[in-house]
Amino acid sequence: MESLKSIWNNMSDMSKSLIKILLGIVCGLLALFMVVLIVRLFRGGTDNYTKIENTMKKAAEKYYKDNKGELPEIGEEATVTTEALANGEYMKPLSDFVKKNMTCSGNVTVVNNNRDYTYIPYLDCEGDYTTKVLADTIISSNPLVDEGSGLYLDEEDNYIFRGEYVNNYVTFAELTWRVLKVEADGTVRLFLTTPVKKHKNSTWDDRYNTERESNVGINDYSVSRVREKLNIIYNDDSVFSEEEKALIKPQILCVGARSEDSTDLSDVEECSDTVEGDYLGLLQVNEYLQVSIDENCDSTLNHSCSNYNFLADIGKSYWTITPVAEDTYHNYRISKYPFVARTTSTSNLMFTINITGKTTITDGDGSKENPYVINGKKAKK
Image (cartoon, rainbow, N blue to C red):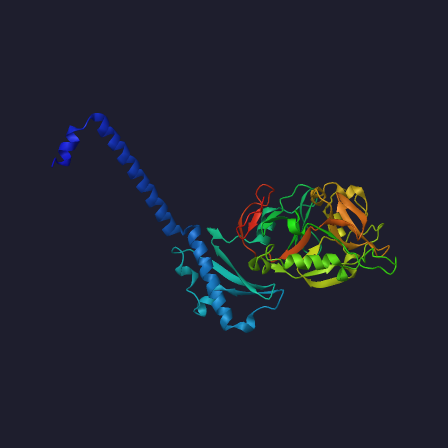
């Protein structure tokens, strides 16, 4: 058998050159692979941090299994630190999972929104990695403003989006939403921008009304058909998975009536009556009015309120939760701006939800083209 040296000597110069080039490429790829491997080993890498978060989550599940008395009630949250988990020997200290001299801290929040517990880990490693959570990301990515479109801080420490062009898009349950506000306790309030196809339209109510002595409906949300329909949607497993339902918080819905000529843009009229415990609701009229930054928006039915208002550009007519104060069978609908409609008429159900602000996001910057993505599921086209 010819030796390798003889084979090499008998090759043409061109063949030798090609082999040298191929060997160079292979060596380059091996070197690149080694660099990436070393970086991952010594810097951790996102995959490593994800593994740490999963370890934290499993440790918290074991902790609360042994300490059931510390679990939160429905609608509440509880938090355990990684330090407490390590002290209880539910996991190793975070220092054992990262490179030497790196300082990390973390905690796991357990949420009880639907008689089911959801565990949400949060990890912070010296600026090298921080878990992205919805409420904090919204606030840090949108500088506060006191004029024009953007994020405003109200007197009750709620962060509210106002104006026309704002980066407040979210994908959740494969549906597209707009962030209305981040409440003082971190709860994020979302408004659906595209109705669920199989539950698209509904009357507000069609019951017998004693005032009119006819089936013209009753504009009392607590007994309305639209409330029944929203409960059906919430319990439809094809709309929300159990995992997604666990992130949705029960709401205190403001269902008070608003006067047609009211000049009070606050929620005083709407919140004069409330319904508690529902998971889906509808937009309050005052929420629509407050989004507009037009100085002429000064009353319930003023068409100027559709100016500089991201809720005016949804492209569909939709119900609000707010009854008209002047009678018992009209409610407010929105089609560019609020108008008075019979409860027996039909409109889209664009509902609201409140979710825990500690929900992690996997992608996005809040823009229309790149919404914040929850649970890794992008919106259906």
